[in-house]
Image 1 (cartoon, rainbow, N blue to C red):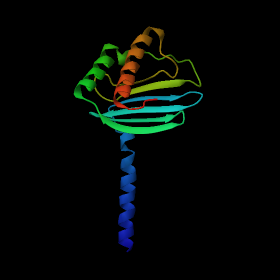
Image 2: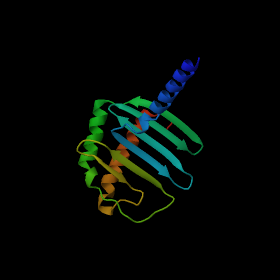
Image 3: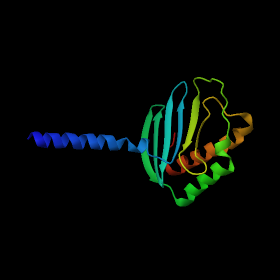
Image 4: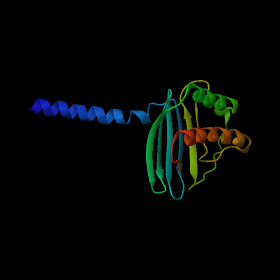
Length: 146
Protein backbone atom coordinates (compact mmCIF):
# COMPACT_ATOMS: atom_id res chain seq x y z
CA UNK A 1 0.00 0.00 0.00
CA UNK A 2 2.85 2.38 0.83
CA UNK A 3 4.43 1.65 -2.55
CA UNK A 4 1.17 2.49 -4.31
CA UNK A 5 0.88 5.79 -2.45
CA UNK A 6 4.51 6.61 -3.25
CA UNK A 7 3.97 5.85 -6.95
CA UNK A 8 0.83 8.00 -7.09
CA UNK A 9 2.69 10.81 -5.34
CA UNK A 10 5.53 10.65 -7.90
CA UNK A 11 3.06 10.65 -10.79
CA UNK A 12 1.32 13.68 -9.32
CA UNK A 13 4.61 15.58 -8.99
CA UNK A 14 5.64 14.68 -12.54
CA UNK A 15 2.32 15.82 -13.99
CA UNK A 16 2.35 19.10 -12.09
CA UNK A 17 5.91 19.89 -13.22
CA UNK A 18 5.11 19.20 -16.88
CA UNK A 19 2.04 21.45 -16.83
CA UNK A 20 4.30 24.50 -16.39
CA UNK A 21 6.67 23.48 -19.21
CA UNK A 22 4.67 25.42 -21.80
CA UNK A 23 5.52 28.67 -20.00
CA UNK A 24 9.28 28.15 -20.15
CA UNK A 25 9.79 26.11 -23.33
CA UNK A 26 9.03 28.45 -26.24
CA UNK A 27 10.73 29.92 -29.32
CA UNK A 28 8.87 33.23 -29.42
CA UNK A 29 6.77 34.95 -26.78
CA UNK A 30 4.59 38.04 -26.79
CA UNK A 31 3.19 39.39 -23.56
CA UNK A 32 1.19 42.43 -22.67
CA UNK A 33 0.68 43.29 -19.02
CA UNK A 34 0.15 46.03 -16.48
CA UNK A 35 -1.95 49.16 -16.33
CA UNK A 36 -4.26 50.72 -13.73
CA UNK A 37 -6.66 47.80 -14.12
CA UNK A 38 -4.03 45.14 -14.81
CA UNK A 39 -4.29 42.80 -17.77
CA UNK A 40 -2.11 39.82 -18.60
CA UNK A 41 -2.02 38.62 -22.19
CA UNK A 42 0.49 36.01 -23.36
CA UNK A 43 1.19 34.29 -26.66
CA UNK A 44 3.85 31.57 -26.51
CA UNK A 45 4.98 29.90 -29.73
CA UNK A 46 6.97 26.65 -29.90
CA UNK A 47 7.40 25.33 -33.43
CA UNK A 48 3.92 25.59 -34.96
CA UNK A 49 2.13 25.23 -31.61
CA UNK A 50 0.82 28.41 -29.97
CA UNK A 51 -0.54 28.89 -26.45
CA UNK A 52 -2.59 31.99 -25.70
CA UNK A 53 -3.85 33.21 -22.34
CA UNK A 54 -5.64 36.35 -21.20
CA UNK A 55 -6.64 37.54 -17.76
CA UNK A 56 -8.14 40.91 -16.93
CA UNK A 57 -11.23 43.07 -17.32
CA UNK A 58 -13.16 40.36 -15.48
CA UNK A 59 -12.29 37.80 -18.16
CA UNK A 60 -10.01 34.79 -18.16
CA UNK A 61 -9.26 32.53 -21.11
CA UNK A 62 -6.71 30.05 -22.40
CA UNK A 63 -6.45 28.38 -25.77
CA UNK A 64 -4.01 26.41 -27.87
CA UNK A 65 -3.85 26.55 -31.65
CA UNK A 66 -1.56 25.69 -34.56
CA UNK A 67 0.17 28.24 -36.74
CA UNK A 68 0.94 27.45 -40.35
CA UNK A 69 4.50 27.45 -41.61
CA UNK A 70 3.61 30.54 -43.65
CA UNK A 71 2.44 32.38 -40.52
CA UNK A 72 5.69 31.54 -38.71
CA UNK A 73 7.70 32.55 -41.77
CA UNK A 74 5.75 35.82 -42.04
CA UNK A 75 6.34 36.58 -38.34
CA UNK A 76 10.09 35.99 -38.71
CA UNK A 77 10.11 38.12 -41.87
CA UNK A 78 8.39 41.01 -40.06
CA UNK A 79 10.90 40.73 -37.21
CA UNK A 80 13.79 40.83 -39.70
CA UNK A 81 12.38 43.64 -41.87
CA UNK A 82 11.82 45.82 -38.80
CA UNK A 83 15.29 45.15 -37.34
CA UNK A 84 13.91 43.65 -34.14
CA UNK A 85 17.37 43.02 -32.66
CA UNK A 86 18.37 46.66 -33.16
CA UNK A 87 15.30 48.35 -31.69
CA UNK A 88 16.48 50.57 -28.85
CA UNK A 89 14.54 50.88 -25.62
CA UNK A 90 14.41 54.15 -23.71
CA UNK A 91 15.45 53.99 -20.07
CA UNK A 92 12.95 56.47 -18.57
CA UNK A 93 10.83 55.07 -15.77
CA UNK A 94 7.13 54.89 -16.62
CA UNK A 95 4.63 53.40 -14.21
CA UNK A 96 1.04 52.13 -14.42
CA UNK A 97 0.91 51.56 -18.14
CA UNK A 98 0.33 48.47 -20.23
CA UNK A 99 3.69 47.24 -21.50
CA UNK A 100 4.48 44.82 -24.30
CA UNK A 101 7.43 42.42 -24.11
CA UNK A 102 8.67 40.26 -26.97
CA UNK A 103 11.21 37.49 -26.52
CA UNK A 104 12.74 35.59 -29.44
CA UNK A 105 14.95 32.77 -28.18
CA UNK A 106 16.66 31.55 -31.35
CA UNK A 107 17.54 32.44 -34.90
CA UNK A 108 18.76 35.66 -36.42
CA UNK A 109 16.15 37.69 -34.51
CA UNK A 110 16.97 36.40 -31.03
CA UNK A 111 16.57 39.23 -28.54
CA UNK A 112 14.35 40.51 -25.71
CA UNK A 113 12.61 43.85 -26.15
CA UNK A 114 9.99 45.70 -24.14
CA UNK A 115 8.27 49.06 -24.32
CA UNK A 116 7.89 49.24 -20.53
CA UNK A 117 10.15 52.29 -20.56
CA UNK A 118 9.10 53.28 -24.08
CA UNK A 119 10.87 52.69 -27.38
CA UNK A 120 13.25 55.27 -28.79
CA UNK A 121 11.30 57.48 -31.26
CA UNK A 122 13.30 56.45 -34.34
CA UNK A 123 12.30 52.78 -33.75
CA UNK A 124 8.65 53.32 -32.78
CA UNK A 125 7.27 52.58 -36.27
CA UNK A 126 9.24 49.31 -36.43
CA UNK A 127 8.01 48.31 -32.96
CA UNK A 128 4.40 49.09 -33.86
CA UNK A 129 4.57 46.92 -37.00
CA UNK A 130 5.94 44.00 -35.00
CA UNK A 131 3.31 44.38 -32.25
CA UNK A 132 0.55 44.62 -34.90
CA UNK A 133 1.73 41.33 -36.42
CA UNK A 134 1.36 39.57 -33.06
CA UNK A 135 -2.05 41.17 -32.50
CA UNK A 136 -3.15 39.98 -35.97
CA UNK A 137 -2.11 36.42 -35.12
CA UNK A 138 -4.12 36.60 -31.90
CA UNK A 139 -7.23 38.12 -33.47
CA UNK A 140 -7.16 35.59 -36.34
CA UNK A 141 -6.75 32.51 -34.15
CA UNK A 142 -8.48 33.33 -30.86
CA UNK A 143 -12.24 33.67 -30.71
CA UNK A 144 -13.65 36.46 -28.54
CA UNK A 145 -10.39 38.35 -28.21
CA UNK A 146 -10.60 41.11 -25.60
